[in-house]
Length: 466
Image (cartoon, rainbow, N blue to C red; front, side, top):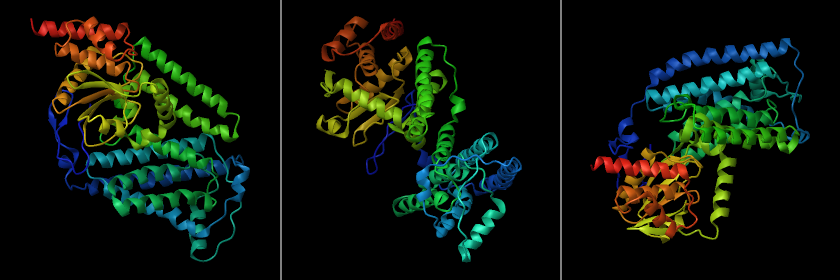
């Protein structure tokens, strides 16, 4: 679904669904309700679940005399800082408080399922790939020493990668950040950063545990998104040969990255683009645009982090293909066509509206009205998608000049503008509509599938008008 959005300080605008109905803004629907009883009920389950599953993994590793470890030489330079046991322990308090920040039953359940998923994934890894922490912790006295002693009474030097501490921190961090503003958001980021560092400075984890734990946490945020169904609800295995071929191509790229990462050392960072390409592959295979989690022109925090290598490559690719012709072009009656713009292009062009058809790139924000209808790259839109885009263009056009964009401004956006020409009877045939767009944007690329969808759109218009 694409939604109009506005910046703070602007006059309220309607949130429009695909059928054009007016929807309630989330803030209006949410109110000040805090379902704390449901949060307490979840905590009564999560507490025993955490200690039983985590303790079982510790016990099993101890009985197996696990001695395997993954440690880099440079980690021996990490100092032991006793006082950081305080932020390390503080996650237990934040774990419980995080449920008080949820504003609806749905938020409570989403937050709880993220924590459950993180626990299951990490504990499963502890059983399948047990590791041992290899540094000897210095003796500590006083209050900090007591806190280390209490920790040692439950935690043994196993349960390493991925760090459950970090995975849970990512989930809790996201909940606190979403509920805080100004100074409190800064304080949230500062303290969460201390907790993340403390797993190293308390000699609880080796470095490899940190990014792998963060990966698990981000995947939990991605799998259970805020304000949307879980990813499994979007799973529709595609029968399209084109989509399956693209899914296979991205999967092959992911496997190549994994193979290169087996060299160890710095090449292990290639696992990041491997994860990104794997998720892109799943989006093409079954999840669709929902897999990239772009709403109102922006991606979710989890999507921004997980897809970062893919997003960066897509942005660089868009600029390389269009660097000689970066400016948008005017097609007809205040409708412009071009690549995804930056803020300067929007302001200098005097655009009052932006129709963004990308799923993979973030759109600029500003005083204009934005509508995002994310389409996956390299896939032809359906006749229904073209009709919805054409109607969006016509709606935006009445507010002033509108820029219709995709990554390059050559295919998805060109098809949408051609559909608008047909739907508003500014073109009498598909060939005429394409010719009008091509006259302004000679680099446009519309294949047989796009032409077929445009023809279907035209036939439906003729049928509707007798």
